[in-house]
Length: 288
Image 1 (cartoon, rainbow, N blue to C red):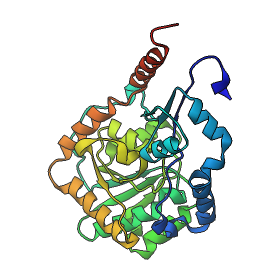
Image 2 (spheres, helix red, strand yellow):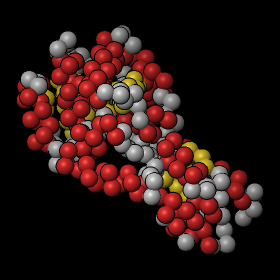
Image 3 (spheres, rainbow, N blue to C red):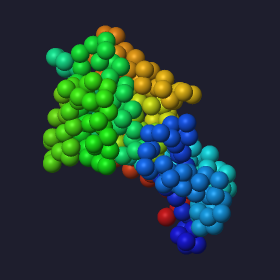
Image 4 (tube, rainbow, N blue to C red):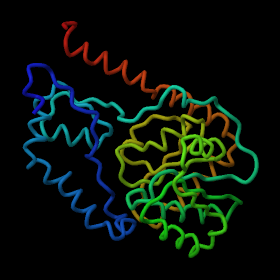
């Protein structure tokens, strides 16, 4: 009801318009009914939500975090829709560009082990990479799929190279994982954006990610190799493995790290606040 106040309303940044690719339904296991329920209410039934529709139609500006949400907001009648990432970094998080870590490459996955994050997809991609080169896969995070991830690693014959660290107690512990890894692997199939992706690039760590939702909208240049979802889900692990091998072996690691830091340095909270301030001034036309 904020739009009823006698001042312009800036609504957002919001996500929620992103839906999972339906042909990847097997990755959602027992949570598939909930994911279908969510997709139904965020998709075809959203026009029935009068609260949402009135808010969008009466907002001076609607800020959205990804293209699917932009399309959804416009369908609901929002007149001025603009991009703004909901995530940002503190300035002190930004590291210097660095050289590739020595030793056996470490593929890092950060985030809760939830169905829509598709951690089993990460294990499948890693197992294919492991056929061609030595590497380790490290998970940071806990969640209901922990046993399923471990079982997948054993079934695919890479359990000795997969480490589940669980929840790390301090931010410094997480930072050390970013700083010692060789590449971030981000396999989420439905996310507004993806904080680990942003955090990794801020530490100068190149990334491989599924090209969906907010990740697809981020112009990171060579800092990240994005892999589009394939029509056949069985093809995607191999494409991700190939992208990992490219980052690890093409001799461009240092330039990717520099590009990562350059992009992430523009995604800090001070820059986001400045952009918001300029938006408010624009809407008010210099008044107030």
